[in-house]
Length: 235
Image (tube, rainbow, N blue to C red; front, side, top):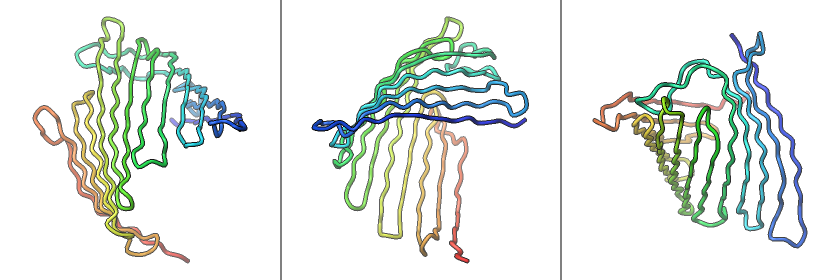
């Protein structure tokens, strides 16, 4: 069974004169998936976003989203409670996001979301900090918290995600990127570390180490070491 993906967006931007704003405008986006044969709904999403971009490159986004999701299999977001049953779920939620001045060495981002979530409700916050050590490094730390409240049989919970990331350039041809992530929904800690050597233009050697741990006993779920070689052939 195949799927059809539908996407479309339209927007309008204003460019004010003699203002702290560089631009502001509205954008409406549609994103949907349906089965290829019967056009049965899998997922529909309509997003309305009004954004403000200031002359110092900082941004504010105000978003409203409506989603229709046809849940094909029972799924639970909280452990120890009944999973959500199969069926069509329609819900609405709003978001407010702020992104700081991207020209600074330290850039901060924050967001707040609230509204319906399947047959329950969700409130969430996100905080992100990025720091540049010119010219050789980029470091970031992301934190996301979601508070979920469902009808009695489906439970409630607080879900956290913490993800630090480091990017270090040893030279123009040697780069190291390490990403770590901890989430409480699955009590999982993940490490992904990649060393990239650009030995020729558009040609790279990658050494990648990946590890997933269970937080309770630090037992590995899966572990991998990958070597990948790319060579650019110009015919």
